[in-house]
Image (cartoon, rainbow, N blue to C red; front, side, top):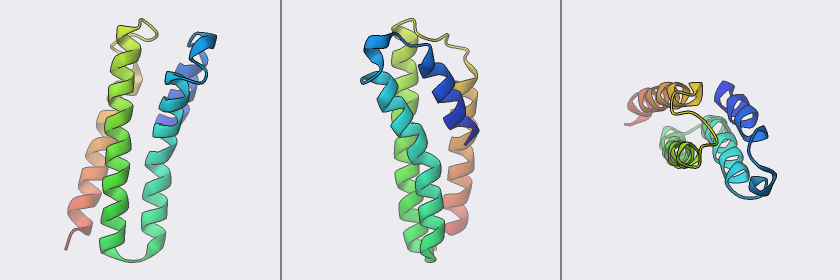
Length: 102
């Protein structure tokens, strides 16, 4: 959830014309990550949990791409904390997947 907060902080600084573009997509992707983890965990089955973890990982990849786009557009710096945070979340999701897989 710290990553979600960071993405909201970042996107607040984007130009106004990005409010419904890149900023909105980044916010949706970031919120999707913990939401899918929570939903998968609540389902009760390992197979379903793994499926939702894969979806979370997809959203994370989407967010990483959007962060790189933001760098190319000079909206953020390439050393923004969000990059380290996405790397950490990626490792955590992969670790969960390894635990949950039958």
